[in-house]
Image (cartoon, rainbow over all chains, first blue to last red; front, side, top):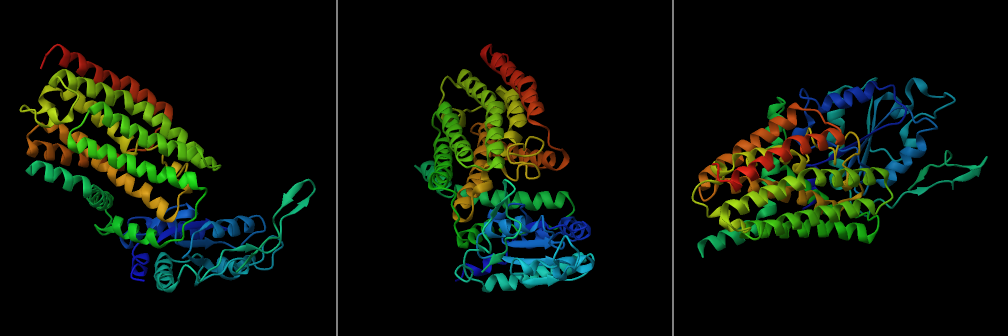
Length: 169
Length: 281
């Protein structure tokens, strides 16, 4: 149990762009740059789902990217938290109701912290991550079961269609 | 007797010492970029955090090879500290890298394959230079034992300065530092061979990196001969050199790295071998 507090001291971040306009991504990268320097909290942008604790997702989930989103989420070992960055990630933003996306990351994977704003400020992202760390500390490995895919991939026109899958906990 | 206690302590505490060096390096690198940087004990926080993560194995051989990489590297380090055969040390270090390369090829991930490929190429780049340095040391002391080099009364750097230069050239390749960090290039191959490891198995790879620091800095320390102060000064200078180089250069591709290693480092080492052979210095 005492190991839990070390999670808050070295959260490694995975950043995934689920069809964002890059506005929020620039702000996330600004967090890593000298001005905001989130490495002083021990955070590293790993880019590798198997070694990261916090998943930062930006953008409304487009139909092309949701399969990867669920894939990457299921590759992260527990304990993990998900942060939805930006208006589009939280609700779909200006893209809500469009034909190519369905608005919001929480329709596919469980989201712990929502960071609003278009694009969200680096201060807000840092505040959101700190919020997420409190959740991460309480989580246990058993709390989350492994992710199952909602629908089985279907064969369509000679190729595997995995677009209709979603995560079920 | 007293020195053997120091040796055993050094071997047992090598991962802790390496972690401290890595933590200090991260602070120094952050200060060079005008950042505050993580705390000094950050590698140990990472270590304790990774212990608690869920283990996701690709397959058991992959995880086993990762742990073997750590064990064989520690073994190589132990032989280096005890002053064993230089050729054996180089071979054991090569073995540990080879195990990691095998682990990289044992998964189906493309990035892992690419990383393993690039690791093999970096071995090709630095290994000949190390062997030539070992042969030069043999010419100087008449023995392949590293303990002879540790006991040398005149500092080895005075006798073979060019070997030290060659070592400085290949150290970034060995430590996977820019401009020669092709084997774990985070922006290209996302860490290479370490990509598929997670949880406690990644910890083995992560800690092996700390052992690698100790290994490389001990090779530098060796050039001080029996003058410990000179050895520590050399280590400190090398530390600053490697971090400054890491911060100020961009990554080259593997062909440029091989060309640089074969046309610059290898001739320098060879020249050093000739100079030692004919007792010029």
